[in-house]
Length: 116
Image: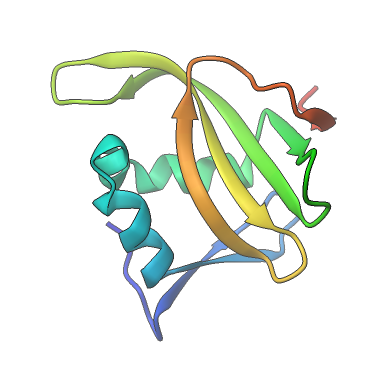
C-alpha cells in the first residue's frame, strides 16, 4: 500500500521525471472489485513506470500513454498466478496516473517505444 503525503504519492518514471498517483485515483482503482488485487502490487506499478517493456500511444487521446510491462507470475488471488501485461495509463501533460489494470494480451495501441 502506498503512503500518500499531501493526497498523492510520487513515482519516478523511466525518464527520471516524477509521475503522481493521487489517493483518490488509487481508491478508485482498488475499490473496483475486479481490480482489488492490485492493492498488493503497488511495487509492480512503480516497476512498470520505471522499467516498462512498452510505451503505447492512445488512439483517442494524444495526452494519454500506457506504460506496459509483462509479468510471468502476477498474483490475482491468493492462490492464482497469471501471465499478464500490467498497464499504467498516464496523462503525460500533467504527469498523473489515470488508471491501472491487467490484460492477458498486448492491446492494439500504437507502439511509441519498446525495450531493447
